[in-house]
Length: 376
Length: 222
Image (cartoon, rainbow over all chains, first blue to last red; front, side, top):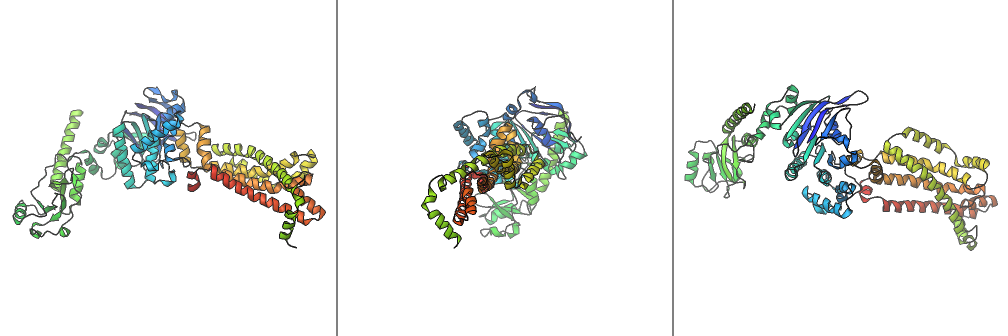
């Protein structure tokens, strides 16, 4: 465990970057430091591997002050990932990744073999091994940065805004990849970002810092969203924290109905039966049960369904795997106000109205409050 | 009578190809002066440039020294050194080294300073010692620019080393100085042509060294 114990960083000109900060960073989890620029999050991270030395206080790694061991030994035991990756442009991808093993005295063959293993782990094509950094995209370079940090299998990984310089689509891919890798390796990760969504998505624990380097709140993301400690945190979380909080509620409990679902070859009787359910729209699926679109019952004629004339089914959610946020999103996006639920194979398992999703949200909130009371 | 005619006559004359005043001997002398001067200038300019560039300090002092060095006329310095020190290689080396240090020093400093700070930060964060950061991270990336500084210094030395002849030493300057004195323009043009060819050869040599020494990753991205 990393314990940040009442640490202050004051520069000679009097600016205070970090002000009496104390944090306990649990093992084998992702702890995110988030806050506006000038909140000292990067300074805090850099004090862990002594790129910056604290003015007061101490940082303890498994109970021992980080200043007790030689600085380069300490740094080699912590993976370090920075914005824009910071790759060595004169070295091949493979040799970039092999950097720390080489520093630790591994022979070239073993270090390269390990590097090749890491390339696979972070999802890089082995054909890139002999390339140079300029031949890679930003997202690929950042994967190399992560692989390089993991190469010597350090227990701790320090990541300083690693994904903030890539476009949103690539960023999402990298975040998912990090969560996957973390699931496999279980490192103690300290992750700095200014993006609260990234913090909520990745963090097991999130520390919100305010300008001047003071801790505003340290909590798991769900708690941050449901109970921000003060107006600063609330403001930093943004206007739609209620919606975002739904990400932490499962959609498993939603009651689906499959009455208004018909397949594209439905007979007139089947259409009439579905319409009898009283819903304003019917969902038409293809022969494999995948959603095609919505239609008013009167518009459907048996045997002559034109898929091009159907209203879009919106974005279906997978019940159980996706959260209530995805279900609500599906309902809001759907032109009919009904969300489409699918199973793992993409087959429609039922539909649910906005009202029913809303009911489930109220129920989830109520349950959350009871849990909080019990826990408190 | 044109220049090409002089060139033809000079190089066509078999007597110019052997003996102590022959082309091979003079060329060897010229190369020797140039190499010694370049080695001395590099021995001063490279370490100082690398260290100041790495620590990012002393840039203003360097610029001052470089300007002062460039402002000194080589020929004047040669005459002064000759008066102070008498005959020998030293009074020739001093103006050549003074001429060559500024381009080496200033470009090396700039080359190291302009290396992208991100990989340098990453290298430190991964636990590289300072010397390793300088030689394994900064130097390979700064190399093309450092070589260009060495190259311009080398070319200036090759062309200026002709002044050695004024103080009774050898080298290709011998042909120019003697030719002017003897009004033998064939000799003057021949000597000048040899200096020009040697300068071009120096360019080619540095190009080849850069091809060999600079990583393809740096060459193409830089």
